[in-house]
Image (tube, rainbow, N blue to C red):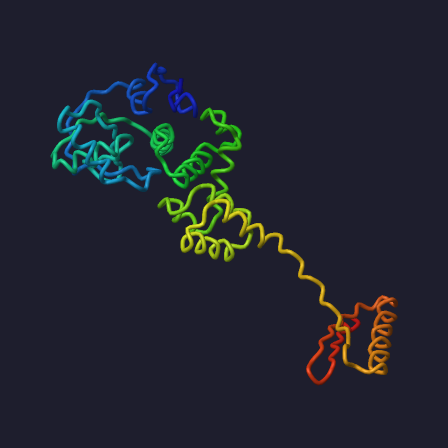
Length: 293
């Protein structure tokens, strides 16, 4: 059973709830207030809302359900300190958006007295428990909870009933370039694509591979193969020395003498680089000897 957020995060001794559905129900259980009718226009969205994408078709479906069966569960709000007569959503933004779609002037609501920390925690945990967030939204929610409550990843994992590795893997996604996060947020790439990109340390290369994924519709395996080639490029095959076919015996002797000389210089500890190329009319040797510092 999921514990109420206040018990999990130590936000006050409030009665626990037997509900296993939504955090909204648990919040309402520990501080019962009267359900009142508030003007829809007087309500502002939650500033701590981790969800950035609200699918219009889903809101319309919910609106149809509310229109048919009524508002079964009220939204939860708090009074805004800086704006008289205005309220901020704590929980229930989808329902609030649905009644806006229906054109309702008023909505059933419960007013709570909550701090910024409590408001943020409810909004974050409510959405995390619904498991409808994108991986980027989920990662940002974890990051906010860590900051709000000054927790370690291990402590947060214990309080949410998740593995610490799950928290860590999600948080790593926030280190990716903004363009990659946007692609993940809009489901243009999968979480596995993004995790593969983490293996590239260069943001420029990450964006190059992202472009490759989108343009060529690469699957995860193909993406991993491209990244592996960048991280572990195969050594270029050694250049073959020319066989000097068609050259006179004297030229061969001269070339071998030069090679032996270079070898003797290398034996003294001097790092000599040489490159041999056979042209149409001549044989070219390029020698590089570093300056002594």
